[in-house]
Length: 184
Ligand SMILES: [Fe+2]
Image (cartoon, rainbow, N blue to C red; front, side, top):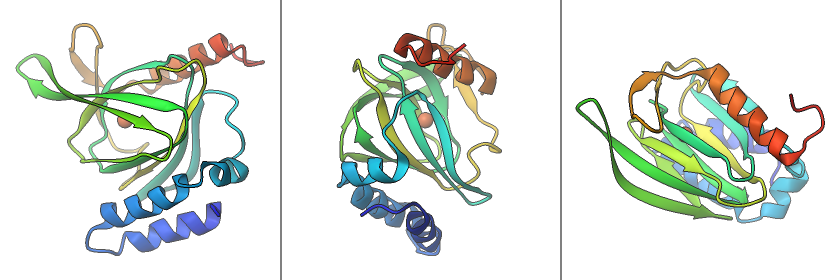
């Protein structure tokens, strides 16, 4: 049974392992193996957005909800990540840098109970292909909000510093499409 405080402590302990990311992936796998348990603990997702469950210099845990049909620009993290889906589906496209832009080099579909580990150098774009919210636990091996990183224009693939305000706009736009009360 997923329990938030317990999960945070388990992730903190996992950081002491030699393969911290692998240890965290096992924890996320266990959590999303019981999606109903995660929903009981975190609440039924009702809007798109990012909820910070835990934030420290060496660890960030997010409850991330993609709005229906949300299409999120290519970006990197510069810290390792583990993602586990507990409702919906996300389609990842992976990229590699090339002179003046990006090359697509793979895709991965993540369904409920799936987890993925992303290396610190990974560049990906995410689409929620469904007409419902896709929700996932994201664990990062650092401070997700304080780590400077890049995003790429989805059309021109021009790199620029990650734009937090633009990200918030994308989530709010998704909420408008969802008809969430209070979405501006
Ligand atoms: Fe990402």
